Image 1 (spheres, rainbow, N blue to C red):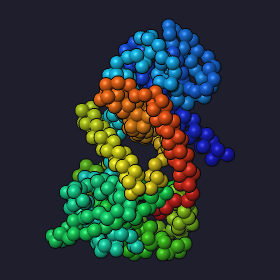
Image 2: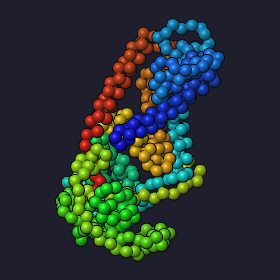
Image 3: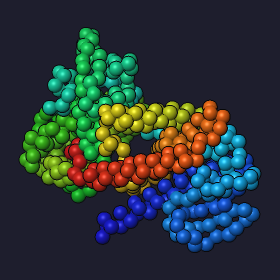
Image 4: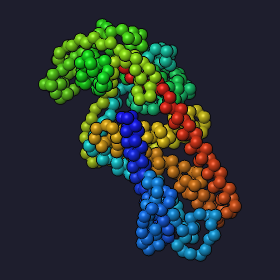
Length: 468
């Protein structure tokens, strides 16, 4: 019953988020059209049969049967319809005005993404703790490209392809977008720079490229304890710093994951450092590693075979996570600057992903459809506070804006492309040709949608997430 409630909650939240973003998109088209004197016949909240509404001037404002999303119908926007000399029709306006109307929707989605992320960063700017330092390897997973290339704990990545002194974020993103593609790395090992060619292997349901190394951490600290799992029953708490497991030091959480894979359900003896509140506050104010005072505790924990993640494969786990992050509040100028930078990076990553898909260098599984998006929105809605949901809304808004700018007829980018071609030709494209272009584009989009949904269904099968 609880699972059905969770699914229903996810569907409702996803509908609200996507509906809001689509309405913002369509309102931008509406506002631009009205500004330039194009007659807007319908502004609808929802799709399908008209339920209620009112008419004001030339526009029918309505609520339709399917409440998710909306649309704007402009007079004379369909090139297949009979045209007249009516100045209120879309096609009778100058090309630059039609260009502005087409661009308004995607531009609004991009602006919204920047604004939402700025607001989030002013309240809660969270980033990986490893982002503050150099890309130093803290652990190498067995039977991975990193191990096969001879990478060792303590190696520092000083170059990846054409990026010098990369952060871990840059390394991970480049690897994720290059599965099965050789990458050039420069590795600093005790002052000696080694040149390595490493090929990331596809990993997980989305088949992102993975190399098999983990960032060096100042400590492995428990950031969450899963309810009704062995770690919680044994008494582990958030904030406990894991020192050893079965007498072996744990330099990274992945080391514990590998140990669990070998010891299976045998009892595990874990020693942690638990700081009291005064020591923890002192350590936070002095910086990482400044205060090692606290109480050493040892727990005997019996792992259980359980799913790794919501739809992950069965693994021996104790039910903890260690995702070291830092949280600060940014001023408005800093938040806006970080928002612009992050949205810019995300935009280029989306375009790079699309390019690599066209070149068949990455799998279609890297694209999430309704199920994947709904899962991400649902997970964000279940987290505390508004920041996670607003952040995922900003990401979806940016994706919606970028995807609508693709030069595919029917989409806004296709309208812009045809307007650009007509401007170069100094005349309109033949209507028969336009009709064939729109028909082909429609078929392409339908096939693409079917493929994305199919991949979504496939990815609901047990995945490969690593979570001890």
